Every structure is written in C-alpha cells, then in structure tokens.
Length: 524
Image (tube, rainbow, N blue to C red; front, side, top):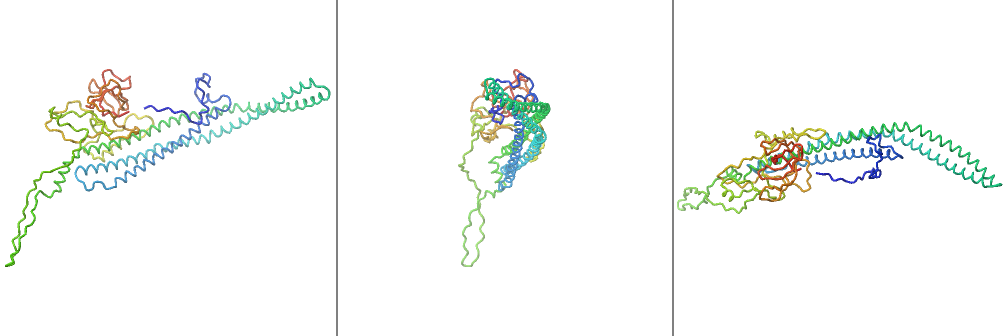
C-alpha cells in the first residue's frame, strides 16, 4: 500500500531550496561538511534546527511506546478479569467444552497482550530512551561548544560591520568637505578646512578599528571552519545512526504486533475447531442420556376407602405406569448457513456436491475452509498456545526473513470429492471473522471480499494482491514456487482453493506456472 505524501510543515520549510536552483553549484558531494556553508548563517541555523527536531522526534517516539505499552497492559488486565467471570458453569457436553475453550483462549490472549506490553517496554521503549539520551549528550557536550564559538564569530562580524559603516561614513564626509573647500572662500573656507581636519582624524581612528576587527575575524575563521567541519561530521554520523535506529525499531514493532496477531488468530482458530465439533442434537441427546429420568409415566393414585364396618385397611394399590410415546412437535426454525448443501443438488448428482460459490454474507466471504495450523492431537489447546508463543520470532533489528514459527497449513486437495450415500448434515463451516472497515493490516488480514458469482472469476486482469504467509514448493508443472513475504497478483479465484496468479518478482516468474494454494496467503 502506497503511503500518501504530505507537504513538509517542519521548522525548516522556510529554508528549503527553490525548485530549479542548485545551492551546491554542481557538486556531487552530499556530506554535511560540504553542504552547510554559504553566505550568512543559514547553514548553521538549519543544522542546529535539524538536530533539535531529531531529538524531539525521538522523545515523541519514546512517549508513543510508553502509551502503547500502557494500552496493552490495560487490555491484558481487562481480558484476564474477563476470564474470571462465570461462563457456562451449568452446561455439559460440547457446549461446555466450547465455552471452556473460549475462556482458556481469552486467558491466552491476555497473556499474549501482556507479553507484547513487556516487549514494547524492553525492546522498543528502552532502546529509544538510550538513543534520546545519546542525542541529549551530543547537544550538551558537542553542540553547546560550537554554539558558543558561533556566537563569538557573529559578535566579531558585527564589530567589523559597524567599523566598516563608520569608516565609510567618514570617507564620504571627507569627500564632501574637500569639494566644499574647493569652492569656498574667506571664513567659509576656514570653517570647512577645520571640519575636514577633524573628520580626517576621526576617519583615521575608525580605519584602525576597522583594520583591527577585520584582522581578528580573519584570525578566528580557520579555527571556526575546523570546528564547524568536525561538528558537521559528528552530526551526520548521529543522524545516520538515528535513521537506521528508527527503521530497525519500527520494524521490530511491526514484528512484535504481527506475532500477536498470529497468536490471536491461532486462538480463534482453536475456538472455531472446537465449535465445528458442537452439534445441537448430540448435546441434547447427551443431556438426556446423562440426566434423563426415564420414559415411564406413572398414573395418579386411585381412591380406595377403608372398610367402615371392621376398620380394616384396604390393600396397597400397585403403581400403574405407561411408556411415553409422544411425537415431538417443534416450532424451531432450522438455521441456514452460507455453506449449506442443497439436498436437491446432492440427489441429482448422486454424490456429495462441491462447495457453493462465494457469496458475501454480512460482510464475510464464505470460502473453502482453511486447514488450521495446529499442534498434534496429543497436545491440549493451552499447550498448543504455549508452543506457539515459545516458537514466535524473537526480537531482532532489521527486516524479518520468515513468518512466525508455525507450521504452514496443508494446501487444498486437488482430488475430486468421494462418492457418498448419506446426505451431508446441515452444519456451519468456519469462515473468517468479520473485520471493521477501518482495520489496518500489519498482521494477518482478512480474505478479500468477492462479489457473488456462479463461476470462478477469470477476468484476465488482476483482481487483488495477496502476500505469502509461508514458503511453498510446487508439486505439478502448473504450480509455482514462492516464499514467505512474496506478493502475488491474483487473476482468478476458483472454489477448489487453488487460485491463479503470478509473482510480482519478474526475475522468478516462470511462463505457464500460475497456480498456487489460497490458504498459504493473506490479503496484501
């Protein structure tokens, strides 16, 4: 995604070079020590302002990390408190298991956000504080000395300018008095000659001051030039370090947050996996089997009076029961899910039909369900989560070379569906979670929304772009290899899960290879 360029509104905007001008006069050097001289003091002021703004940016970023960590800490505490609430204590069976999984995964997410807060403070805020301290130390110990010498140079230049102004004024006055003496006579001539002599004496003194101040400035300049050149070099070193640090620290932040997104997605996938096992009829049946009191209906007791003549008690009446053989009458409306299979289609084809097309329902795109990247069956959900956290990518500076350490999913099967004699049940199939429209993807984004269609989209053009989550090696001639992080232009989205597209990297693109598994990628 392209970043929108913004007009500069920094304190340096007023010093920006006009378009078409070359203040360096054709020089190819872009080092600070060769680029901030020129007439006047603009170069010095610009570099001082740049270093001040750089220190301010680092301090703002440090404050940003602190606030981001506070948000994660508060959110983690809220999630942890949520897990303490009672949830489904009266339930049994698969629903109880699903609610327990929800609570357990919420607890795992709380731990993930708490770990992210710790990572932000230790891996982001602390290094940023160290960089800010380095900039402050440069300002106090290096720049302060240069600023002092710069003020001394400015003072000496002001002395030279004032002495020159006085000397020029005296010279102009002498010239005017000389012309007056040439045309005056008598007493006017005498008065003009007296003024001329006084002015000449003043001009002589001012000339000496002008020469003295000029010589002092000339003696000062070599030292100033050396100091300013050294300061420019140190500023350039510090700026290059700062820019590289900013790139690394922001990249580290993206890595930390993407790891959290992967962990949250794993938690949600485990919840969906458990929910796939939940069947309302089976849970009701289990409830009846475990807690049912039987199907015998006892008839009410009959009235049998005592024998009033001899007062003998009547014999105890035997309990009469009958079996319940009612027919259930239900007014329940069977829920219809986007993935329901049409029984008529099933009967017409004589086998299990292919999944339906991809309609847009309530902002979600129903598609062939992805195989979740989960741990082996012998591990519990909590163990699986812990393994995913332990295997998450560690902190490092620079671009990541691989996604978080989770096993990639299995690609979609290309074999035709098997023939079956039993119609499939009307169950829900896991679909991607709905995402707000203003969601910004740094982790794993949702699958792109596609319009309803009855045939696979093959427009010949690019539909959208996706980014590879895992490495994939082609198994047939029509497929192509790709690596995690590669960007692919999608040109067709068949429902079998094998999409058509091409790598944006032309150097690795091969003619005739255009098929790739859709569950190895996410929206770019």
